[in-house]
Amino acid sequence: MGRRHADDRADALRLESRGGGGNALELTLCRRAQDQTELEHEEHPGTTPVDADAPITVRALTAADAPGLARCVYRCYGYTYTNDFIYYPDQVLSLIDRNLLRSFVGVSPNGEVVGHSGILREQVDARVAESGMALVDPRYRSHHLLGSIISHQAEAVQEFDLVGIYADAVTVHPITQKANVAIGACETGLLLAEIPEFTRFRGFDDEPRDRGSVVVYYRATGEAPAREVFLPRRYRALLKSIYRQLGLRRTLLDPKPGTTSVRSSLHVELKRRRGLARIEVECAGTDLEAEVGHRFRELCLQRLDVIHLDLPLGNPMAMAAVGNLCKLGFFFGAVIPELHKGDVLRLQYLNNVALDPDRLVLYTDEAKRLLEAILADRHRRPDSS
Image (tube, rainbow, N blue to C red; front, side, top):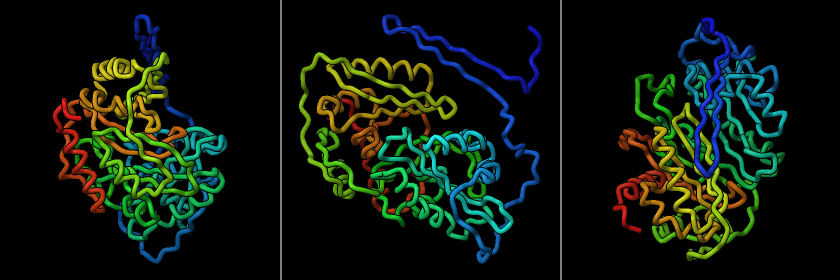
């Protein structure tokens, strides 16, 4: 085989045998997209603050703005932002065309994109969506721009017919936490070490750091369906407190183990660049603990830094299994209402990851109380329910 040039397409294949469970094929495509702006060759505008009176227009992103959005991301994060698609204008516009994404930008008088926030949903029929990709050019961080951009998301909420929005707010600084609190969002958990250590927040701290954590927020934007949810004994008090703040129509019940011939169904999502894996329990059977344990051990051997486990709060068998699942090392992460056509309890596991809780910048007392409860749960005895 001839020598490959550095800018050639490079493919990687990984085949995993799972015995009676079949085979898993993973394909990695490393490419240099034709439409990605050559950001590293641009003259960097620096971080000198722009006068606070400078006019900024906040509006929906247009096709002409997409390359400017990529430049703005680069000014904020370099090439370390974990949602790769935002660097590629064609991918951003494709998500908008497929009715999955609505993006809103702050634009300077000369047409430069200097801020952004978007609403992204997993499927076109999803009733909740993620508010994310919130960023502001370092030169404009004294303009209170992020709150103005987020306030424009109401039109996307109406268009998508959403009953709620959830968001992850970084703990490197309090800006995105403040923006979520200002619009009435409630804290529902913290996901520790979710952000890769290579992520850089320009204008805040460019020094090497450990993996970063996020506060999870939820804001009701419509009338969510009334639902029954089952509170595992381990988290009964914590979940009651969170649901009290959310104000959703929920009947809180105690879970009881059941008997069923249905086998558990799990979906595993790998985000290797982020060092993150997520196990979603789609259907809980009597074999749930064994199935989760099997996938969990596989992911640990693959050296994923963080593993999330999503459990349906409306399934009594899944909730009855929480105590035993936590014996694997999982601990409380967050509640995300209506995520998969019902409320989700997200547990988390850190795979030998360094974490310094004192470095987390938390904006509210509620976030601090949640962190205290989560750290206590992480260090709880394995045999404690």
